[in-house]
Length: 342
Image 1 (cartoon, rainbow, N blue to C red):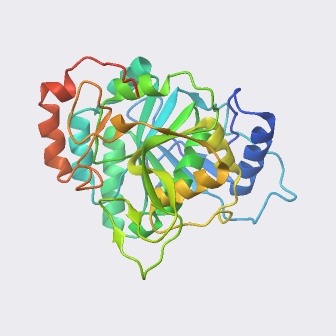
Image 2: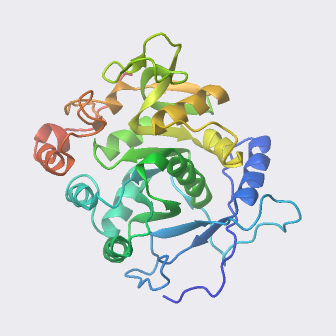
Image 3: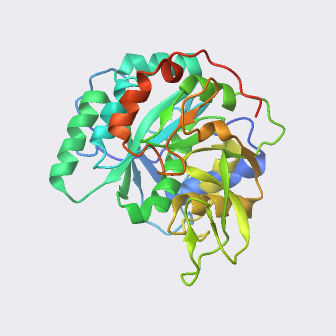
């Protein structure tokens, strides 16, 4: 596949159910951010295994400080936003190749056709989301994995644990530009997921157009190093509480993500924890919090959607091994899809 000779701004088509004000704000946000989308590997030497690659590189244009004097966004060819019910971005890193192998052996198909069949059956599109590193050997390994599996969303942001809140915001903005979805899901690469049940949960009729869906806990409004943090309990003594979702998996509706897209990168405060950061923003935006405990089950049940070792670990404690063990259990992989009353 030839590499484009020039980079063009991606023209995002906005979903019909988003209000006009949100559409205008989102368009301004995309113009300000200047998302550039390349349907090739970031090295420019990406060999396509399939006619329509599903891995994509997203580069943030840093050439300007705003949209003043800029022309309208132009699209790369006739590229359109892909319509799905929900886009699921599986957050991963350079040390997580083993986790990705386990996921591809369990609930996430390892081949292009399998991912397409899963999308057709559930309305969910799945991609691994990863940034970049200055380590050339790690980047070379990533390029080989991209070429083999073609199931990545590559972000032009440094892949560092301390920058996870920035990566998460970049992910939501990139996903919104590429996919026309009712929901955008952030998931970690160390949970056992039932896509069929997640699909049913996201397909439910909701009165609220601005929805923040997750397994909710109470956390501190702001941190104070003088006070003790009680991780298993999820709160800090002596401070006010606010409700936010556990980090391993949560979903934002299209209206909420449209508002995030419209934000300048420094509009809201970033905290050290990604889940606290998003939760604080959701509080500021006054969205509807939808709590569902099936997203944080410690073991497989007939209604569990996401299984991980809560509260011992933020995810499965030994994900590479535990993922395979869970998948061998009939209760995890073969029980019928039931609708929870939550």
